[in-house]
Length: 349
Image 1 (cartoon, rainbow, N blue to C red):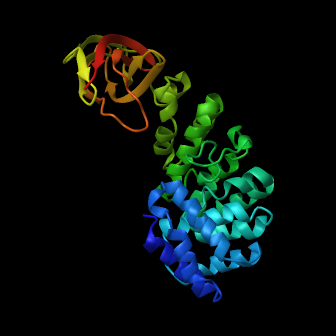
Image 2: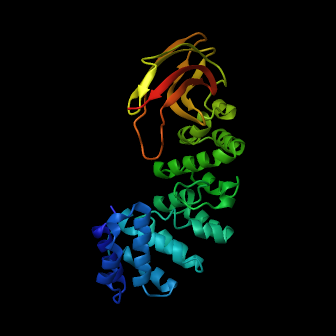
Image 3: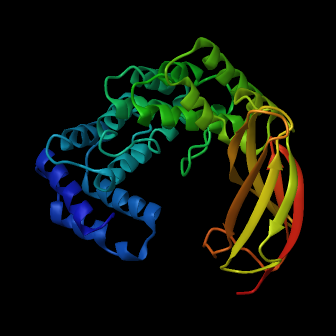
């Protein structure tokens, strides 16, 4: 998606905003060698070409980029190199840079570009983002939450954001936002927080539930997913589940040997030990590795009620994970506790 067309669109917008811009030279430099690069390297390559071609002091260059959105319809792929440019080259100019990110983000999110400013300016940058949380533009409100996430995927680490507290005023403002796009970012933000500070995250979600709101349950369920995967007792209580409650009456594999690239099919018969939710996970364990997966949720109306769950787990090779052949253990987890396990073997495809 970052290609000749996206580069040309950005070039058209910048040239329309600043007449001396060397349109053709920029396009040639930005597209040279592009096909050999992966996504983030493409962004950086085009951004570097933009820096060379937009030969102005940053405040003037930023003004040109802000005007660009009035000249062409940028999108994620044409605009991302522009936000990357701001994130790399405007660090001595907080106000101009943040204003430019705010203008660009409705077309191409500035969540990555804002990270260096949070790292360097902390309170001043966070104050600006708090203002974004009160914007009439949902993209800017989302950026206030997404850009300040403790563990933003692909975003540079900002250590102080990984402590509980600094971003809570922003989350409090946005948890009942009318836009699901914004609320989902809030939930992801809290899920990030829970990875390092589970107890503060649970307390925050419990407070939100106490304070109420039309969207609190949906936000809570999405925010607590990581803690549920880990079997955290406070998270289980938040969803009404009794930690450790439930048992497995039977666990059956279709076969005890599964080839790399194949499917492990299994059936579990579960027994409720009390009324209420059964939060179900399964784990695949081998030496040095244990991976947990969603198995579903059932709600028991009485103690002793049984449920049967059938699932297929794929061992299809993927580039991000190696699955060497060898012994494995399948575990069934009910309300945070392993209630049954059974061995199997992964063999070469």
